[in-house]
Length: 420
Image (tube, rainbow, N blue to C red; front, side, top):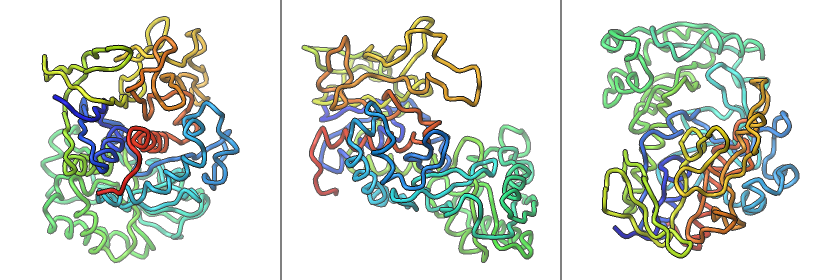
């Protein structure tokens, strides 16, 4: 099978790159093993949240001053990275994903434990909190679904009360949830979301209980377990509850994250893209220093050939990188990896300290071609968390690097044209 571009990896970076290229008329294929980091998504997309442990307020004016020259943003160019970031909300809007936020100023998101963290963009489900030390509401009603263990209301209430918010906590019980209680493994966010899919009556019943429990609160906080396939249930709920609703992300799987992945896949396929779900690249055939074709487990002897390939397999979590006893390797092309040669320096014994291995990744040239033996693979590009020299946890930059590098690689492959 022949394509213009084959993208290896179906997470945020791979999907974004594929959609951008498909919008420009390229015939693309994405190979996805299945779940991606979007299934663990908080509902927000970080660009640059922390520098040396301190919150970043204005990423657009801060970036050029703080990033080292080897960072993916610096390799792209700080000005160009910011310019791409300004295009991202419209990019999401074209696929039907609404986001709040601006690269000019970070807002705050509430974590599953009720801690405030700086972020760049948030899905429209979630409130963009302007201040770290104060909520827009002085009194909130935190409500959970009875028996749902992945939303910790006590922790949320405790941390919000620390910043002066009066909190009340209650649980909601409905007959629609009874079948989920037969096993603790069934009372999970995605299964709860399915209860409300296509069932507006159940959503309105839930809304009536929410309003009753809220009493004199100024806003309601609920677990983000609505809208699996699309945002319809979220919209119905917000219309039915007269108070503002602030959704709080829960422990994975992430319903908003799954919805985002579903929406991105729909957009990619609507643009003519081919999506190979549940497949894994097994080998690559090289010719004259270029990738000629790749083979996958499901396609057997039917190779995928293309003019360009994109490596978006992720870091250790996505198995794009693998730690072996004596070295870290890139698992598909055996590309060069930026990593410390001494295993004892891969990690820090202080669990909350910066972990060196988080910044390991493939080595690339200035135009994001991975190198092998110091030589660039000229038709292969790398994007996302497989890139070296950034720490997505300590910087709060994971989604930003994924999106910005993916869209930059799309620009390298084909100049930007009018999106379809």
